[in-house]
Length: 127
Length: 415
Image (cartoon, rainbow over all chains, first blue to last red; front, side, top):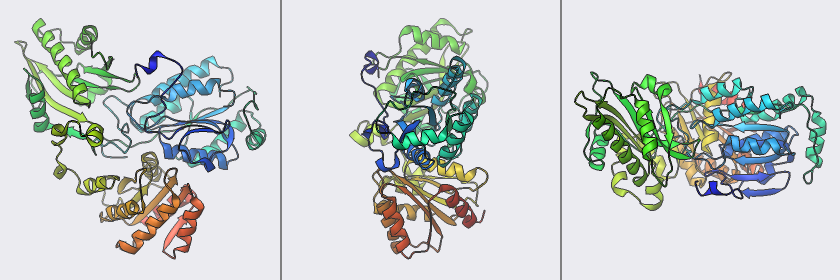
């Protein structure tokens, strides 16, 4: 972790996660099931791999699609957490709405909640 | 909803001291203006209505989604919908990791630390404080945790975390800060120095033994001598399982003290946790791929409108085969409370065809005791899996959607 922090070109996604996939850019780094995805504008970040697939399927079935799907993973220490993902989604022109899937353990959800509160205050038209 | 102190499949799926439960996290997010759902199946429709409410042209987004080849389609930045989220409930600790408590912990700590007296019970007649070395998940570093009260009801809001560099260990400054929070003002300077030594030693131990958390209560006598009590030592077994590191430590695990079914499950790579042990009517057996979906299945069944109690948590694991599925049925059926089995699969790595084969194998080779089975197969190769189930001629009820499957499961459970 401390080594990763010394640079800004690479990040750790996971561990214990299915990876990261851009349905819009058609690029998969991981093992997510491809047929479930459909290019669109909903960004997803989830601790659980299977729950992220359920989320993707539901979004796809409703006629919406996904922009970027980030696996936070189920480990004690996550390379990319909710706030990291929210920061990416905030500035991603392809993402118009965001879905978060949490899990017991740690306090990433509280940090996300704080970030969201702040985001709603500073952003006139929040995603 | 799991027994407190269980690690639910994912290495990080346990609420550490001072961390919120899933229910609390749900409220925290809701208070931040986030729209919550109970099952991911609901995300699509809820998101659609949120987008509509926000004034977005949903059909336009759908068309764009359908037609989208590369990026750069949408730059509309108008009123936007909110974040939709879901938090899970289960608590945990034990399973598959090493937890040392009571006499075992005392013995181990006595051996590993020099110069401290340690007892099992915390004396009631003196004040005691709480001290541990753990992981600060937010800062991605190890940390010292201190609380000026060791009262379990107070620790939660009185503790503070002091993260430090993993590579360098805690420095004098951070140790002093941590001790300050213990509010040991009445104690003589020698006691402070001893406490600093204790923290330093525990931190070294935490690193060398690859612990998750090492906690003790600490009391200081009027003469200034330290007394440790109620040690709780938590080690992840990944180092041991993958590379045989710390065999002596992990030999301290006593499987005879654990649930026999859970220990048996481990041999097949299955994570099994018996649930609702006090409830004789917890009659829904669950068989799921993925710890997250497994937890969510149990939670969603427990919430209204279903209000169904499950007998177990079961994660088949990513390397599951048809034999694993058959084994899962055996494990679930060993609980006499079970009246229905819910197989809920969303396959990523897991192949639905393989799951179907496993279910069929179970019916052939396991005494199902006439217990009804409800199957929901989605994901990788779902058509093949669903076809195999349909053509099997077995008495199974197959569903596509979670809600309908769950409704039928609860009906069959007799709850």
